[in-house]
Length: 439
Image 1: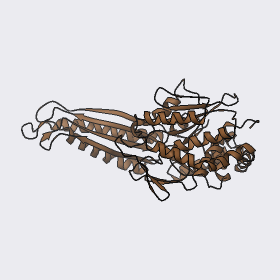
Image 2: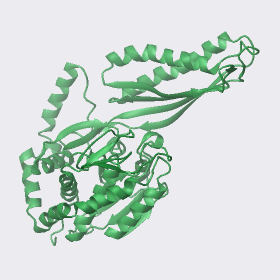
Image 3: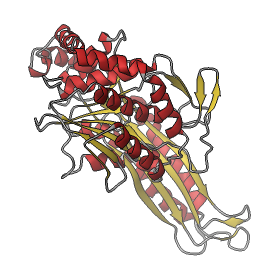
Image 4: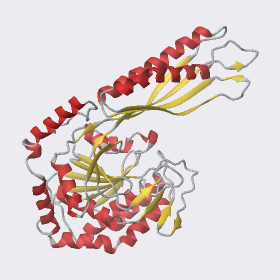
């Protein structure tokens, strides 16, 4: 697998990459022109069983929406996906797979065996949402729109995965490759892609290609992973009374310095960095009272970049700022012990790219065109980051329909062309897994 670098900001860099892409068009990865992929997809769609499966998706859309409603109303914050996972497992078994199980970290996996080529394709939606367990996830319906936290991201993905399985079973479509139907844990927040990292571990199920269904929409193809580092920083000291212990080193003061030092250096760097790079202090806390010197102060920090080197560079700036703040705050203390700082990595999402002219990406684009949608290509932080970073063909696509307000209490989903999104997923699966001649 050839991996390209992220798209650079500079005109010279973009021009060089364009020439590289032109050269690749005549190499192994670009052996076929888009028209040839379109022809292959048309031939796939001409098969009677495939045509029937596409029609089945439309005819059973009410079942897909029932799955969406049921699963949405089961809370599933990161690390607490078990109840929703069990419901998804029951549905896999009800629809029909050769075997189904929950792995060591909580991923729910259903195996549908192929004809024995030895290849494995995974189709996955993530079980978790960003919302804490006390969140009210009851669906509210207004007209044709469903409102509920997590209704689109990513309960729609789970419902779409089940709909594809249902259509394949109903029309007895046998694939050449084995297909894993997965509800994985840990995509959101501090889940840190733990479910997919476990799937692609040494000794895992040996997945050769991966399709992540995340949120709604039809036509977007994410083939580039946005890398990120996330930290929890804790400054600790003895604490004390704001008057009686004045002069002790203050963890909150140190935290303020740390944030200022970080931004002072990170801002100019990210403005001129060769790849898009961001940083954010997302949460902060500490202290017990307005008249008490805190015994600790903590914050959670997110850094992202399209480039591996630029992510490493902004991380170095961050590390330097934390240590500088510790030294400077300790230098100001008039009494008491020194502060300490703990910098804990709580999230490490790898980056990478599958070239746009790779057969897997072009195949997905041809499927999208075949159903009347214009494919668009992009970069994001999704479950596909992990296989992409390993050179394994992987994309993230939507589950159909329309949505907005992801990660907010006002998240909504509307089933506008919902079946179309599921049909796109089905054809991508069949194009990659291969349809056995008997089907």
